Image 1: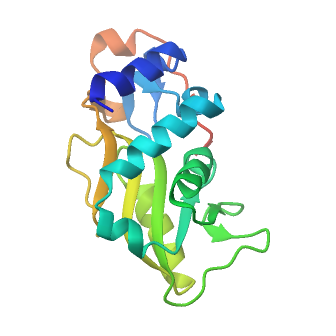
Image 2: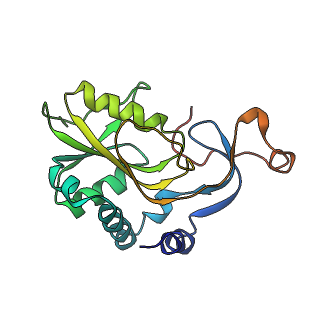
Length: 193
């Protein structure tokens, strides 16, 4: 799937938004990709997951024991990537601000994990999720994501495989351009912090 084909999926779902957005990282942007909206159609979610899996080297795909994703954003795409790989998929939650396994999920010591996210901007959530997996004894061998918004800058400590890389400008809250500052900011994601 080409970058333009991926963006066409977002446009078709009405998931490529324009305005003034507060990202999960706290940074600001005039563009937002609402992955929950693009993934609400099961056929589309499956297509995007299969395309993401195709970005992974064959040898890596064969090593994966388990797919783990942080809730909420990574939950649907993580499940679909698990289906595409024929592997179980579990998710991490943040009930108290730190990622943890709940709902009876577990990771066996030494289990090789593919971390899956919907969008990566700064990589903070991904790094925290990778740490949570390590605390359980799992070994994250790579991360896959639908969208890399980091402009290729993110460093996760593991190989990183985005389906598409998008370089929408992002700004620190105190360095917003006047034209963006003139638009009321909204926080469309799932995290309130």
